[in-house]
Length: 251
Image (cartoon, rainbow, N blue to C red; front, side, top):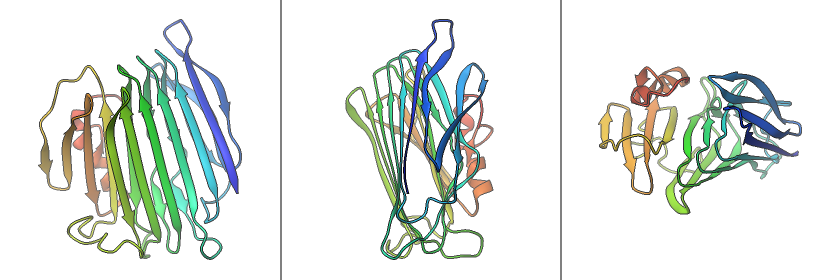
């Protein structure tokens, strides 16, 4: 199955944001929901199970100057096996213009047993843009060995590389569960905060959570591991763990 969804937001001239384009295809459906704190909010609704091996899903996001958008999903995304040798793909492309803000806060990606999934995100931020980007990966459903999942995240700021991050788990990723990678944890995630108004913060590590300032822009990256999805979300949510110092509203 192939599906393309597109979201385009523009400042409405009254201090708010208008969604001038919002369209999708099953199983990648977009629904506007009530604004949260003046930020236009969109939920991704899965119109079918999956992604299933063989699916090719693409989401394009553009946030115009001065606009602010929050993207969530109504449920976790469960990558499932399909025909032998097939790979499922989910590609997100986002462009955030100067003075604009994008909050990417979907539910977790679950790598179910037998899956082969590639998740790739590419974000282009203009100078002066703000970003809050959270990725969470759960290695298998309860009591099962995870399938194969590869997660790539590329972020540029003002035309320069800001973040290049990749993680592979599953049977074709030797050592992924060892001490050099997840150390036996079954849940992992990251939160990237790009905010030109925030002061620089030093690197730190506290248990399963680490904070790293990035050299390519006004940005800080938090990474975390956890034994389960609930604990991971606590690490990456305001009021708990790494994200307690973010200070922005909402999880």
